[in-house]
Amino acid sequence: MDGTPILIDKNAADTIEFYLISNGYVDMKRKVTDKYRTDVKMGTVAPLPEEIQPMAEGIHTLIQSVYDDSVLKDMFTDGHETKVKDNPLNDNFAKAEFQALWKQINHKYAYTVEFDSDELIRKSIDHINEKLFVSELQYTTTIGRQKAEMNEHEVGRGASFTGEKTRTQTLKHAQTSQIKYDLIGKIAEGTVLTRKTVAAILKGLRADKLYMFKNNPEEFISKVIKLIKEQKATMIVEHISYDQIEGEYDSTIFTAEKSTQTFDKAFRATKAIQDYVFTDGSAEKSIERRFVEDLDAAQEVCVYAKLPKGFHIPTPVGNYSPDWAIAFYEGTVKHIFFVAETKGTMDSLNLRPIEQAKISCAKKLFNEMSTSNVKYHDVDSYQSLLNVMKSL
Image (cartoon, rainbow, N blue to C red):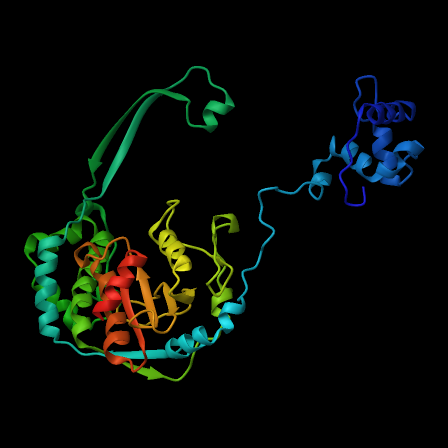
């Protein structure tokens, strides 16, 4: 009543029941009658007794919910649902330290890369010959006996057969498939290489590897593309160069992305440029979660941001978005501006080649080519960030 919850006690309940009976709104079994529904629709519902008149709206809503539960949709709210729906930039964004950091990294870049095609061809041939495995197409047949008696629920859930047995066999694809593939064209498109280069790679493959194309063309194409891109990724870092181009990012990139996580799962920050930080990982204490907790508590940290996917560095193997931009208090650490990537491991051997190549490109841009005062590294904890910083 007027936004304040009111408890309906026994006396009020008895009064409501008498009102419904005396006006013919419920039958002997206390079910709502057509008369009540009609009066509601026509707006001719009998007035409630004076003592419960202030609760009229709520009482009639509850009565109507017996036969129409949609009327309750605005009466109840999820007590666990956070009332915070937006995650705007806060006062930390305007701090001089963050603005200085943002000015250093808020640039767009273009890359150029030159490498020896013959070297890529040789390495790709060796890599594919060693790693390629393509599974043959298979199919499974299921044999069973239909029940003599069954109901619709059993049919619906696929339980109308008994004694089912399965058998998996290899499809003789070479004898049945009539589909034609542009093998060289598909691989050239997926690797962004010329048809000539792709043809040279395929020509160098062992016969048993090339024969796998007949077994499963789609898988052959996708895996060969992946393996070539891995070799391409290991070569580009040595030969890539970056040039700053016109354009910069608008501050709206921080608020444009909406997390799929609920706010009760987010980290409530004090030093970030937004009040809530959404971390990756499903574990309660994921690498990113532990990192941001330590980051927020560190006395030497002035302000930081969880960088959105919209902020990225172009690389030949795909755009790369680092995780964090951090500004430290001057005099507390060796480098006051730092861009970090949080990973579960700092061992490059445990990272996928393409992922490692993207990180290496970022290192080359920030640590070797850029004239800014920003340093970059991948880390697995806040302590490792401090340790790495001393070596840069």
